[in-house]
Amino acid sequence: MKNLRFLTLGLALIALLFTACKKDDNNGGEQAPQRLTLEKSAVTVKQTESAIVRITAGNGGYKVESADKNIVTAAIEQNNVKITAIAEGQTTLTVSDAKGQKAAIAVTVESNIDPSERLSVEKQTLTLVNGEEEVNRILNAEHNGNMNLSFTISPAGSVSITVETRIVNGNPDGKNLRVKALKVGTAQIAIKDNTNNQTTSFKVTVTAAELTVATATTEIETEATTEVRINTGNPDYTVTSSASNIATAEVKDATRTHHLDTPHKAVFIKGVAAGTATITLRDSQGKTVDITVTVKSIFEISNTGEVKVKNGAILSGTIKIPDAGLSIADRAFFKNEKITSVDFNNVTKIGASAFQFAKLTSFSGEKLLEIGQAAFALSSLKEATLPETVTTIGAMAFMNCKGLTKVTVKATTPPTIQANTFNGINAVLYVPKGKKADYEALPNWKSKFKEIKELE
Image (cartoon, rainbow, N blue to C red; front, side, top):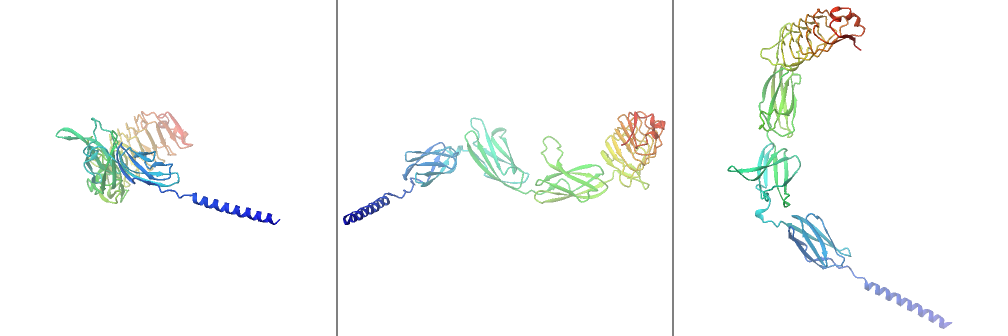
């Protein structure tokens, strides 16, 4: 029994010693990973050429990654990093091993083209006033007589670039870049020769232009429009009027005087009523300029409110009779070929032959009482609406208006007309609801229209 106890104790001591030894053996077998080191941490390579960087220490299982494969590619060959240059520029290679150790190689790729043959521009920096243009000569961009350039402008819309042939002593001599400033600020122009992937760049600084216009004062007639050219400035533009009841304005493309005239902007000013107004033009840089506008009436209005057109006045488009006008003089607009529409405003009487032979196609007037003899005869009216106030329409007032297809009379009591008031037309008459019979009862109304209908 005693011997058995000694045997058990001995076996336990042996097991304990064995375990301790094994633990010591394990601790002694674990080694710290080696630091990954390279022969070089930076290399410079010519474009399309290659270079070798030796791995001087590490833990095997090597890999390499390029931050920009458009500039450099790389591969592991035995214990070396083989670097292949693709395009000019700078990037970084990261080498790693099986133990997660890493090391970096900074790579610079230089062009293998002789400096005297490299793509470049004559000026590395340009300073332009907004709206101005300047030429920058392209150097060494033609190969075998061909040119294949592309451009990147940053920020977009800051300048415009066009390529043009450079002429020296009457002969072609390379190419120029014509640079036009479009927006205040700084722009970077990158140029690429797609023939051999060469690149170059230059900087453009655009300063604010003074805001100037062709004239600071102008005179126009009511209903007329004039344009004031913007000579220099910084788009985009806004415009306001101190009195829109006298003159209104907007900025649009200026009228080009000939095909070589460069595109410009202009302030288009329209006269509304007689008086003086100030048109204020503002550009994107907060610069302002004022244009004083004097609007002269194209009408002469008597003390009794009779309206005549001033001698030499030119009327066109849609016109509005001034508030003070109460009647239109005889033959006031006789044979006018430019008026298209008239707002009679406060007019109650239209004189004889006032618009005879005129080219107007429509009119409006809610206070008309009397329309004189031949007032609209042989005009280009297409439609006529007479207000409920009208009481008398003279002989031949609408005679031979061949384009007149619709006449609306809002008067509940049929106005007095003559037998030939509507001779020579081919129109439908519209009258107030319930009043058709009243109009049909009068021969001068019934016999002159294709049909009489009631308004809804």
